[in-house]
Image 1 (cartoon, rainbow, N blue to C red):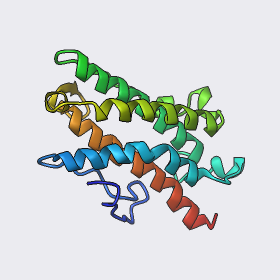
Image 2: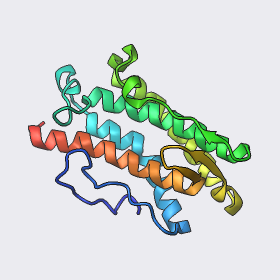
Image 3: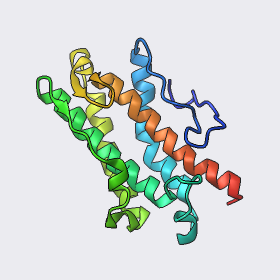
Image 4: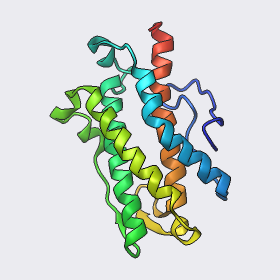
Length: 182
C-alpha cells in the first residue's frame, strides 16, 4: 500500500491503477501513507522541473486536465481533504463537504503559476504529516460521512486514499513527460 506498491496501468486516467480500498489497514500501511504524503511536494516539484509554459498547459491525456490544472487540483483537493480530516477528528459524525473539482479546475486561478500550489502543498503537507504522526488509535478510527464513498470514512482510510491520490497525479505528469520525451 506504500509508495513502493506502484502498479503500472495502460489506462492514462489511472497510471498507477485505481485506488483499492483495503479490508484492513495496518500501522505499517498508515506509516507508508504518511511517507507518501510527506514526499508529495518534492515528488511533484521533481515531476515539474524544467517544464515551460507550453508544456504546463498540455493535457496529460486527450480530454484531460493540463499539467497546470493537475497541480492546482492536487492543492485544491488536499486542502479539502485536510479540512475533512480535521472535521473528523474534532466533530462527532461530521458530513465531509463536497466540492465541484471540475468546476474548480476552470476558475480563473487555475491559470496561476504552479509554484503557488507547490508552495501551498509544501506547507499543507508538513502540517498534515505532523498531525497524522500525533494520532492515537482512537483518532485513526474517527470518521466523517462522505457522500462520494456513500458512507463513513475513517481517518486512516482518508490517509491511504490521499497518499494514493498524491502518487496518482504525480504519475500523470511523469508518464506524460515520458510519452512526450520531455
